[in-house]
Length: 288
Image (cartoon, rainbow, N blue to C red; front, side, top):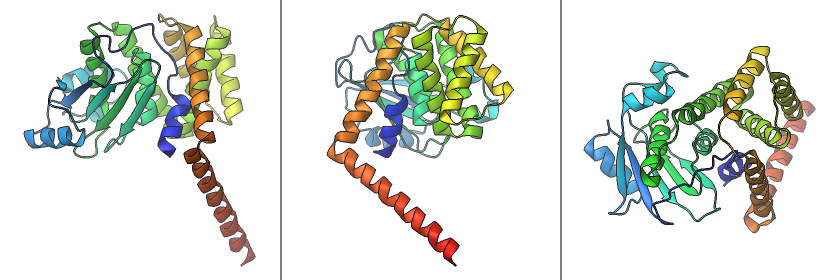
């Protein structure tokens, strides 16, 4: 559940005006499988996903991974085989995105959500897995491909590229400031863009620097410029930024409702106990 709280903090960060999974009904599932899985691995993953017999299955190739990620990350990280896979279950309208992962070691839940929302995917429960520990890039490519097939639509190439670039930018930033900090920073920048509609690089720089300051994150000049370049691309896409603000508020509402729930209160109590025990351990250390 801790993971779900983190996801809620940054989920639905921004949304393209595209109807998600238009030709599928609530509860329908579509499966994406890396094409380099063995038959035994496919059967194992399908059982793990609890895939129904009538689930639509599509495959993802390693060439497709390189097509959408090759400009942003090393070929060695993408690898030579498409292994990671996913199950996408259509949710009811307005339900938002939920992501759960297993055996994925490079793409975090937050990164998936960022990239998927950039591509226009919404209202779905997504389970991403692999038979062994892998980067997870095939699953991202597969989910976007699944959206196009299931919704009978074509996502513009610049949107796909922006989605993947954002994911990689967040991951690389996370290597120096921490993954959660990086995701929170990207979310905060988007929130401010939705409110203030920056027009110039100076406007973007002010938003980025202020967001970093409020989160206690120190950015290098190179990182700031990289973020300016990224958000210049994103803000020029066909995005309804009023809807961005609405979705961010929806995320905050979900967090509030969770924290007020019995489960949320239990989580907070465990968190409190952890910090109490940590303080006691520090006191004991200095008393010796």
